[in-house]
Image 1 (cartoon, rainbow, N blue to C red):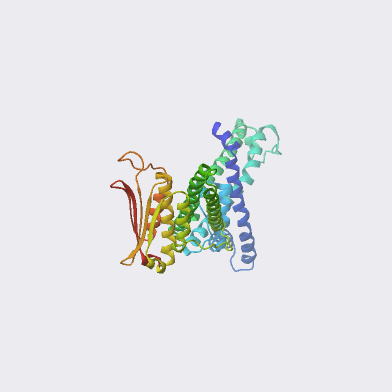
Image 2: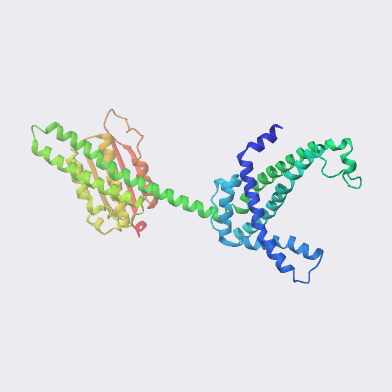
Length: 409
């Protein structure tokens, strides 16, 4: 009795029953149409009955070939039937394989539903009659009635348990049919291998775009905050004895913050897919502003840039600017106000970037991890099919990057 009570009180059972009965309702128009068509046809007797019963099977399959039926059935399965399909994406059927699967499922849904629907209409009143049969005459006092012998025998008391058995059988039919269809639904309505590949490609593209935007935020805003922190500290220390330098540092803080806000606004515009916000991204042509901000932060920066850098492809120039920006940010963040060397050269159709600074702290110490700077640089270099090396070399921290110029073509 416990499983029976569990089935009766489980909402999933009744949601699945509603889904199955919906299939019975959807099958009715096919039967009505075939009754109208078979009536004047030469089919008579068992042939006409067979046509009305069997022809809806292929008719439902043909209906399921309509592209939108798959999405309709998928939504109904997720909301009412449940099962593994509830966690899957069910798009509109666009391939022949997906449409055939939907057609077979639609026909299966309708015909299993009509069986459950018919049982739901017939068994409850039949069970009620059996349950109360021993207590009422039911007009069987006539000896000629086929129920007269049963009514006047001890077997009449089998009626109540037989009625209960009918109810149990109905509940069992609903539970078994619902669970079976829930298990089978992914095979008919689930994504095809082609759709799974397309979905994975879309997810990979979205993930790559998210990583790119994360790198943009980390490189631009992270650099600005590092510079602003050092500039604010320098300004506060010399505010009384060197107000001109403090004023210059505060101006640089304002410029760095404004540039960071512009970059942040650009990235947020990309996240919102705002076509109106297409702020040009900085390239190596904007390197002087970056160098000046770094110097105002109190860093002694020795930099050299080849004149040929002006002619490199825009894509390489944009990524190289971010690489230089992150390299300088790492130097500020991990080494402090130490001399930094920056070299940008073009040779053999490659752009070479070198950022070096003395290691701070005891000999042999390497900079602490935990940041995303080098990881972001490595991702940019990988996208452009370049090469990167970073680490301590003879008392210096050196980051060397080589990018092929054709990678931006």
